[in-house]
Structures are given as structure tokens and as C-alpha cells.
Amino acid sequence: MAVITLTTEWRPDDIYNGIIKGKLCNMCPQAAIVDNACNIPPFNISQASFIIRNTYLNYPKGSIHIICVHSEAHKGEHCLIVKARDHFFIGTDNGIFNLILNSEPDEIVRVEDDGTTDELEIFAKVASELFNGKKPSQLGTKINAVTERLPLRATIDREVIIGSIIFIDSYGNAISNITKEIFYRIFENREFRISVQSNKNYTGTISRTYSDVPVGELLAKFNQLDLLEVSINGANISELLSIEVGSSIRIDLISKTAPSDKLF
Image (cartoon, rainbow, N blue to C red; front, side, top):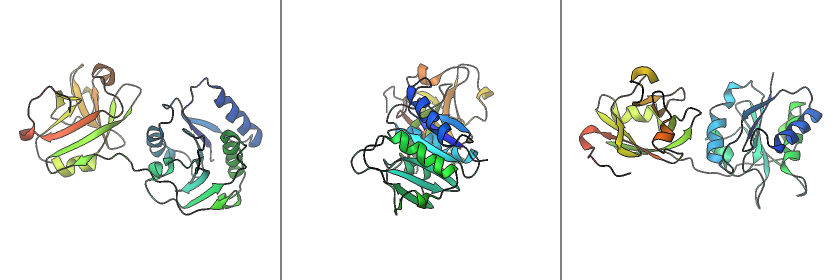
């Protein structure tokens, strides 16, 4: 059975949670409402898109995903319904849909409003009508494209990859935008050094599990998303090394790595 998910920048105890959930319970009382993610840093559509992109396919087909991150529409922005891979996304056309899907949607509909209704009312109404069987085309005007925002990608050379940390999980593990495919395309059967924040923090191996190294040691592994993750076994690497979203991660051929304590 399809569900309605919420991805928001609100704290769990924020009043807005109760407002939109209350509206949904009134409009479609049979719907299961699921908190996909909350407390996303305000206005951070990059982090929100990362979470939604890597979670939405775990929900049943036909599910409706409400996105309340940087959702107050500015001039030229509209509420959109975007359909892709048998899922529906509702949010503001601020670039987030392009970051979530990174491909052409199956359908895009602009929801018209009179400029006086807040986005929570609009989002809840649209979600309830979709849940109750209406098609997107019945709720607005079809358009051809969403606002585009380019995703942050790793820089690749024959002997080096420079990436960025794009997510810190609940354990402080730092997830990068370096994919398994890119890594092995450059470094398969070659010696390498993975450095994070500075050349003092490095490893030359890819681990399979966190326990592959002694407690307290740095490790790198590919997670279930096939993204390179750096961690410290038994500790919070983001706190210990002051890593945050946007921090650098670099992979060099071992012969090209020059010793230095400087940040890169």
C-alpha cells in the first residue's frame, strides 16, 4: 500500500510537523504518514536530495513524498508534482527535483495557487488528492522541465580523485561523493592513498567492515550506496577530525603523494 512520506528541515518537536500531519489526517485519514527524515539543516536542498534519492525506492510504488526543505516559494518558483519511477514528489521548484532524480521525470505538473495559501496547505491538499486517486494532470498544468541544479561531483584525473564529504551519518561516519565505479576505474590493481582533511589522516586500503582495523584506527569502505565512506572504528571521525559536509577527500597514487601536514 502506498504511503505519504515527509522529508523536512524541522525538529521533531516543531509545530509544523503537527500542522501538516493534522491536515493530512483530516484530508486522507486512511493514509499512513511516515517521517522519512527530519531536522535537515535549514535550506540545505543538497542534503535533502541525497536522503530522498537514496531512500524513496524502498517505499511501495505509488508512494507520495512531500519535501519541506527550503519550500517557501520565491518569485518564479512554484509547487510541482513530479512523477518518476511510479513515485510522486511534491515540493517547490527550487532545484531539488533535478538533484533527487538526476534524470528526466515521467511527468511534471505545476500546481496553481493564488499566492495567499501557504505551502503546507498546498502540499497536504495535493498529497491527499493523489492518495485518493486523482492524476497529477487533474491538479495543475503540465510543464516540460524542472529547475536544474548541478550535483557536486568528484574531480577525476588519471592519478588522482578529489571528492567532497556529502553526508555525515548518525555515527559520525563521513560519506563522500566518490563512487565505487569511479574509484576502481582509476585505482584497480594500483597502490593508492586516501587522505581526508590533511595528509596526516590517511589509509591505503579499502576495508570490508569497520572491524577490519583495530579500534581507534581510520578506515575507508564502500557503503551500501557504493559510495566511499571514511570512519574510525569505534569513534566519531567527524568530531575527532573536524570533518563536515563539504570537507575534502583525496585519493592519490602512492608514488605521487607528497608528505605534508597542510590541508588540501
